[in-house]
Image 1 (cartoon, helix red, strand yellow):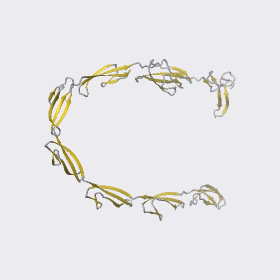
Image 2 (cartoon, helix red, strand yellow):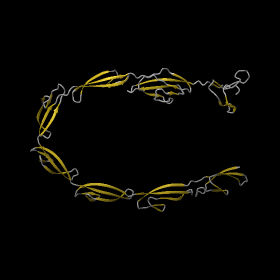
Image 3 (cartoon, rainbow, N blue to C red):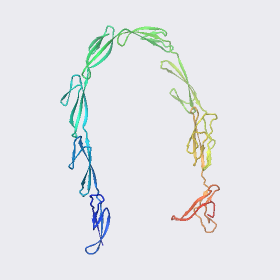
Image 4 (tube, rainbow, N blue to C red):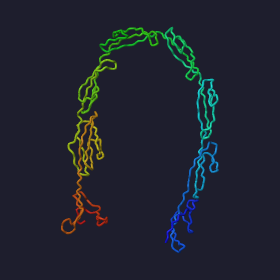
Length: 448
């Protein structure tokens, strides 16, 4: 018998079409045909029908607003999506989805500035100050582009300025001499090139009088402008002020600043330090430093360091319990103190911030306790809770039922009170076959 393989392609004009072989319609299958050759012998023909896919292809085009685009002989408007059904080289359907994106008219703006009555040149056109003009251009995509050009009108600027001069004198302003007590309009050119009118007022300055007070430390001599002034007295000085006019200054000497001494108390916990005059100090006592105050006089600062030492905590002994038992933890703390508690780890404790929590560990655990008093002083201790895990259950892994009185009987052994009842017991061979099974029986029973 000869075997022949033949691959056929179905009519793929529609999904689910078929191919015909030997008078039989086939679709997506592998089929064997028993035929007879010209020589009269059997022949096995295996026919495989391969399904040809239908193609879907996206195409993106662009068109300006108000125009169209042509695809495959069809005029398409911008903003539309159109499907075209074509035929591939295999003769199957091919769907081309054509999306025409609308390219909107581009708009932009541009600003210039010009003085009142003048113009600005743009794109070969003179634009007046204060005007707004639209220019039509073509964008890089071939669509309309509108540029709005605004010419901001720069009006003549006005401003005021205040100057000062002594009586009978003048002051220079942009090349002009202006007398004290006058008001003048000065025409200048602004930074934008347009006119600027500044009204300048020159205030007349009469001789000024001022008073100041001096004060020194105890035992210090006061001087002003090289002249000694006795505390409790005053003296007039004729000076020239910042503008160059006469100024009469009355200087008064006040009573001296008294010597200052301060006291401060700092409390720290035992073992801690306090920063005193730039140094870390842990010993109790009084510390003093002489320094210059903000007023420039010497002062003495006294700091009293108080060290608190009454916060202690501990435990009497470590603890041993059986698996499943609980115990209350009793720390040794100062009597009559107001304390806060923090136990860790707290997952097996009844509380983490109480004085005597109930511990229920499944494994040997060290519990840590930190206490703090109302001053924030802390002390820490730990206690070990050892968990005994003796099970009291024994199941032998072999026995010899040969009647010699040694290991003849197989049973589950248990200490009293450990196992009350056995729900199920099964024995399997080395190949996983069940050979023995019993349920709901007592331990230490040789008749099981």
